[in-house]
Length: 307
Image 1 (cartoon, rainbow, N blue to C red):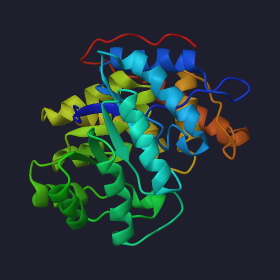
Image 2 (tube, rainbow, N blue to C red):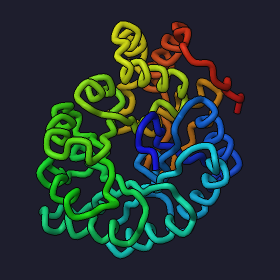
Image 3 (cartoon, helix red, strand yellow):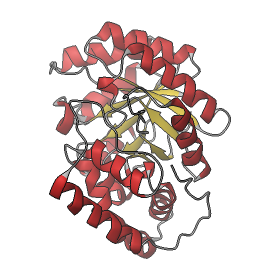
């Protein structure tokens, strides 16, 4: 399992009746990999995992497995209301040939460290796959502290990476101080990617990469390679869009950017609703301004397929 590079948290596309559009899902995944992404993470928050049934999740993993086979990694997000269901999904993802798992705390219940450790430990034990711990205290209320991450790293050999989404780049350096190179660290907040790379992040679980993979890959590579002038030029252009990853309607916003570049549609499952009215027009104006100033890129990848 390669935890380095740009790995989009892939969105889940829906048909008009809000069933999963497997045909486009496979096309989208292939396009992301053709445009330089290392793999995809499925079923996460951006993938509207909380609105998907267990069977829908496994079918999505089957579809993405076909698209990613031999071309990139496939990571399954493991999240549910109960530890039992998380363990069952981890086992199913393992049987379906996923490359790794991204393990989340349980939905809704904000337990103490003893309870949260027991939850993620049960998932780690359920699979031989390489596992990433997802720390997002802003969205989930559970905060895995650097010392707790170190404790897990000492106990579980298949715990290999952390997706750090606290929005505080100092957390990346704090984890790195405690575990050195034992874990790969990915930034999970789009508008903190250069800051996180600067203090030791080696991966990016990205949102806007769903619509702009080439720009995301070039930004990340410039940051990793220390090309600071070029990296900041790209960052300055990209930031108005990257900030769409950090607000409550991030799913709607990122799907809207996808639609504007011709790679997807804006359908979401309730309770989310598509953006309308003045909010829609204001957001489109930001997107159009960015696309008109779209920079020339270092890398040459596949161009979007209109959808």
